[in-house]
Image 1 (tube, rainbow, N blue to C red):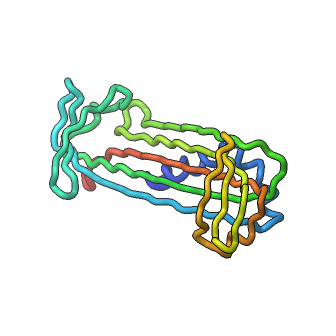
Image 2: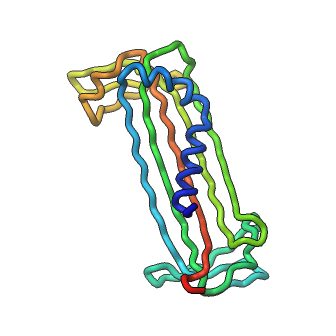
Image 3: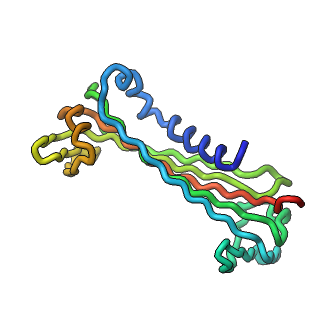
Length: 196
């Protein structure tokens, strides 16, 4: 499995493991309500130019030629496997998913989950960390003339927003439940250069 694919799989796993979102799955299938999903992925690579095992200091050279020295924490095992010339790839993924469901009497709330994985002993260093947060809110008001809506948060505060897609605003109703899932993931992989 590729690095990007395994990172994406963990992001998906963390998002699906949150029970709050799954409570509304049957409702979504029966009634067309607004939804929105977006994700962003940034990948950077650098080459190891020096490593000091005593201090765990690793010097990296980016694609732009700039160098930076970082101190690698003890939680990053297998540092002894790394040598100059190895390629470090770091991928950051952020995702936002917003789903609207008809009110079923659910309480508003929020929750978070974290998942992490790292390379086995003796392998090249690598790891993935995923953080996902789910917040449920209630549609408190809709103003079609002004293209705005208000959400009531779990702490009972109310906030007004401008709808980016007016046609979707017409599919919602006051009292609907809005489930917002925000996911962040970072993956790090160290590999030998091609041909070695």
